[in-house]
Length: 114
Image 1: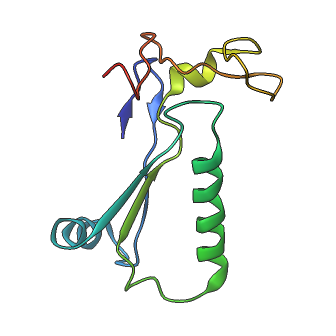
Image 2: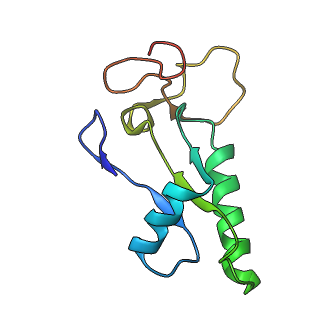
């Protein structure tokens, strides 16, 4: 979807049964669209994992997805924070051994500083 502040790409996964991008974008403009923005704080992987589990279930279910709204998710938004890994930047957090930093490449906490 574009470059992060770190210079690496931010990906956007779009799930829709419209079969081509023209119909998908038309449906997104005219109907409900859901966006999940994951990994604003690296080290908090629950949203990423939930989206991957949902997508795997959807692909293995073999039911038609034509009636679903357009669902889009950003797997990882704070790329700079994900690459700035350490084991001591979060007080009172028990594990994992290393995790990403809340701040992005510009040291902004994307939930609080913007």
